[in-house]
Every structure is written in C-alpha cells, then in structure tokens.
Length: 251
Ligand SMILES: Nc1nc2c(ncn2[C@@H]2O[C@H](COP(=O)(O)OP(=O)(O)OP(=O)(O)O)[C@@H](O)[C@H]2O)c(=O)[nH]1
Ligand SMILES: [Mg+2]
Image (tube, rainbow, N blue to C red):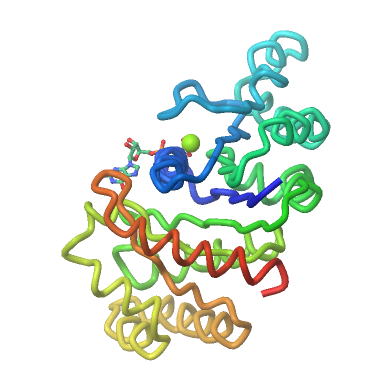
C-alpha cells in the first residue's frame, strides 16, 4: 500500500468534498488514488467511494436490532469500525493504489476520542500516513475561535499520533479575513496582538496562555488555505502532504 491520508475535522468542515478534490488532483497528475469512506452514517457523498465502511456497517440495522436512536447507533457504528479493519484493509490492498484518501466521520469526537478511530489509524497498513485536520474557514473568523479550533486540532494529533497537515477550508468564503487568519497561524505574536484587541479580557488571556503553550509544545498549526469550490490552494496542500508523507510518522 502507498500513502494513506486521513481527512479529519469538525462536522461540516468540508472533509468529504476535500476528499473528492484530492482524488481528482492526484488522478489528474497520473497517480492512482482511491477513496475510503469511514463514515458509517453518511447518506450522500460528493464522490463514489472505492471502499466503503457502509458495506460492513449499516446504521438502520443497528437501530432496529438494538433499539437504538440515531446517535446511539452512530456511537455503536463508530466503535465497530475497528472490528471491520481486516476486511477493509484487504479491500484497499487489492486495489494497490498510490494514495488512499480516507474520509472520516462527521462527528470528530466519535472517531478521534473513542478507541476505534485511533486503533484504525495506527494499525492501518500503509507505507506513509498523514492526517489532514480541517479548520472550517467559516468558524475561525475571530482569534479566540481560531485558538479553540487549534486546540481541537492538537487534541486530534495527540489521539491519532500521526504527522498532521492543518488546512483552512472554504477559503473562497473568507477572502476578506484570509490574511488575518493566516497571520494568526503563522505567528504567535500576531495572534497575541489580535487577542489583546478582543473585548473579552478573561477569555483573550486564557486564549493567549493556551496559544503560547501550544507553540511551546510544537503544536502551532501552520495553516494551508484551500477552497474545494475553486481548487485554489490545492497545489499548496499537495506540496505540504508530500513533505509530511516523506518525513514519515515521526515528524
Ligand atoms: N464555498 C465552499 N463550500 C464548501 C467548501 N468545502 C465544502 N463546502 C460545503 O460545505 C458543506 C459541507 O461539506 P462536506 O464536504 O460535506 O463536509 P464534511 O466535513 O464532510 O461534513 P460531515 O461529514 O457531515 O461532517 C457542503 O455544503 C459543501 O458543499 C469550499 O471550499 N467552499
Ligand atoms: Mg463528510
């Protein structure tokens, strides 16, 4: 197996559309990429998955057989992903792709913060692995929100323990804020200046402490801005992914 790229991020941050764009990008450049959908609850996808967890786990059957509501069934389905690992790995291996782009469940807490997701990521066999964490462009318009999503990104990195590329999605929707957001990501000093200007003193102080701690711990996010609508920035993302995948998992 070649490279595995796990696409994570908050609900609705653009993971599935980005998955389809990455596949298109690699295919257009003569590589052989495939998609693996790991979201058991998804109804419509913007791509036709080559390997699909839904052929092993069916939410409506779980709801019927175990008398669960939709959320209970999603929790159970997430916990079952690890048990389907061998079948999924075999299906992926048979395709012998250069890249497998893995679309993960919308509920990041079900994938990253329970046992099954980290088990899957660490035991999935690939030459190189990387995680993409999507910062939803429309959620990080203020510096305090930026820090809070950065914390989530750091938490996902702690859980999945892979090299991670942080992506600002939907850049086409935040053009007027783009420079600010990229400045906060590139420089703790810029971020602190922006936090100082916030009216909410208590929370801006807390955010500053957390931003400093993350920089010190090497979690500063260094964001790549991408639009899956215009394809702007996809070239930068592919370059960041190439660097990260080549460095291997210990970076
Ligand atoms: N304008 C714009 N819209 C986007 C972009 N990326 C995604 N969207 C839209 O955002 C919505 C959510 O995108 P998805 O790709 O389904 O996001 P997701 O993270 O897979 O969502 P869940 O799996 O449900 O958590 C859809 O309506 C997309 O069309 C983008 O770059 N620009
Ligand atoms: Mg999705």
